[in-house]
Image (cartoon, rainbow, N blue to C red; front, side):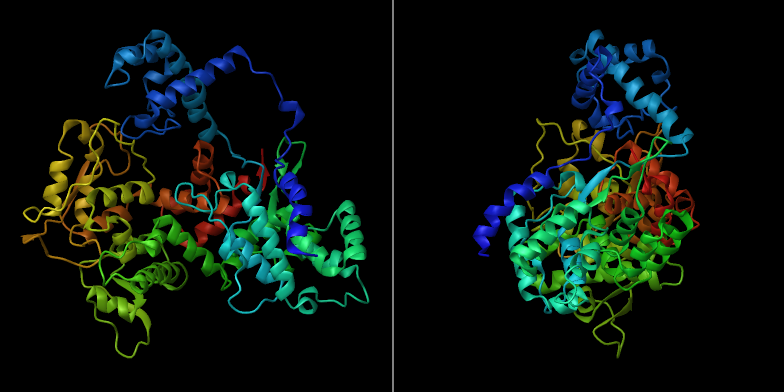
Length: 614
């Protein structure tokens, strides 16, 4: 069948099927009440006037937390209304009169304070959300190659639209939609895969002797579950009418292949329990970014994957497989938000595409070495290690002594100026402007990626243009002047002191002791490391990047953030209050310092929300 004709015939079906969402339980359908309308109005006012300082979910930022018992005025509605009326928002209290304050206070108490103080600490079960998760481009490629033997170098998703990143991650399923362009990409890729693959080897059976093997055996692998009677009837008819290749092409654009289900089955406890086949997929894509293998499918058939200990054992097996390292490497790149350097502007001739790739490979290799091969394999080592794992060209670029006779890629001692991932060129370049280093971007990197602390965007009336390079001023001097205004200091007191600790490294990731003819001052100060809203403020001074790394490595907030970032990546969520609560509960031992990185990843499969959905 010609590609255009197939496209036109199948697009309406695929778009309609992909647009489907989990059906709501009819028992939960209610008309909006007056209280609900008032809360929605309060949410809108809170988002406009309060969220920037107190956090979208009351988790606190430069303003205090509103979602736990530390908010003293939140316990009394009248007191909270009075505080808001008199003092909020700080820059213009008149913007929220008593009626406004009443609506906002009721929202804060009902949706942030009361739920925050009760639900997370008191509930033993924090369920996940029902979802159908569109395969990411990486998952699509890995899945297709696992099913169909393809020539080396064939990556069907390489021409697909890139995913929309949320909080730095490409795995967010809530933002993944089946656009017309995506459907066109899937159809073209499906035809190319079927045309290029060795189908006899892929099917593993003699199709001519037993046509049912395509549906009974291979179909289960493709859909990650047995076909329904309706699906079997549909594809049997398609095989009889059009032949094997059109049927396989159609299966590759079926939503049952393109989406992985986390819908579950409603049980008497009120939760939707993932089926064994859904658990098999959740485990496989979490650790290997591909379709379940034979062992997982066998455990799904006999129902064993409903057992929590079997899930743990399978998670431990999967994370030790070689394919798991491609997942952890990609997680490292997205966690640190350094993938963008591959597409950077080559202002500096020495920082060419090859060197940028070397930097990314260093970060991937080092993360995997610490996670799987180092002696302790703990989070702290990612920050404080006095060695790195890199190619010889990058060692030369950094000015490090590469081990003799070590080949092209080796563990290499650092020189005392760098420390762990904070000294990686990928991080240093990603947090710089093309023509200069940026203390602000580097400070924000620590707050956002390493501590999960969101700071509000600058007010619209402030000058946020990057200061121009001045041959008479160091970078530190220029940025200190730029953020000296009182209006800037509300936020920059938490940013700049961190960023100045990176000043020994320029925009290309190289060490420098002089900046525009002046000695570099890389001393810094961390204000309120673990809680931005803490009063009185707690300040910690440091005089080098290794000292900063050491301080961060002992922070429980940094450990909790790291685990939460993996939770976001593996679950495909942005990370709302319920997600933070679930992650905190699942990772308490890791936060307290009793687990390796790999153990933390496995432990997340033991959280109730891994198999229980709402």
